[in-house]
Image (cartoon, rainbow, N blue to C red):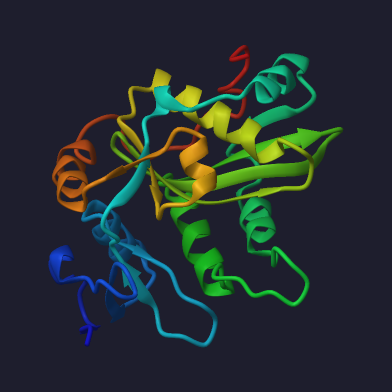
Length: 233
C-alpha cells in the first residue's frame, strides 16, 4: 500500500517507495508549484495516465547524465556541424509539451495529460521549467522540456519529427548546462537509449543526498536567453 496525500505537500521518505512497480511512492496531492517544487527537491516526480490519481515516484537506482558526459555520436557530430537546425531556448514551451504529449504510435496513450501540461506551463511562467527547441525553416521539428532547480535539471520528455532533431536539442541543453555549472541532468528512469547517450545509474540515496545541496546552489528561476546556444557547435 502507498499513502494518499492531501493538504500540504508532505511526502513520505523516498526509502518507502515500492520495489514493484519500482519507485512508486504515493498518490494524491496536487500539481501546484508548491507541490512540484517540494517533490523535485526531494527526488520525487509525478507520472500517471489520464483517469488515474496523481502518482508520485522516486526510483532506485536513478538514471542521471552529467552535462559534460553526453555521448555525441559521429553522425550527430556531423548533423551539428552542418547546422541543419536552428536551436532556440524558451520560446515555444507550450508547443513542445503538446508535441511531447502526442502518442508515439497510432492508438497509443500518453502520460502527459492536459493537467500536466497546464502545471508545467505554470512552472515555465514562474521561470522553473524550460524548453529547448529544434527548428527547421521556422517549423518546430524537435525539442525537450524539463525543470531547473539550482544546479539540477530534471528532464521530463522530448519529441522528434526529423532525424536527430531531439538529440540536437539534448546536445545544446547539455552544453548550456555545462557552461552554467549544472551538476546533473536527471533522466529519472533507465532506458537503453539514454544509456547509449552517456547516462549512468546512481543509487537513490546518493542522488537525493546530492540533490539537497544542488538545489540550493546556482542561479534562481528565470527565462533562459532565446539564443543561448549560438556558437555552440
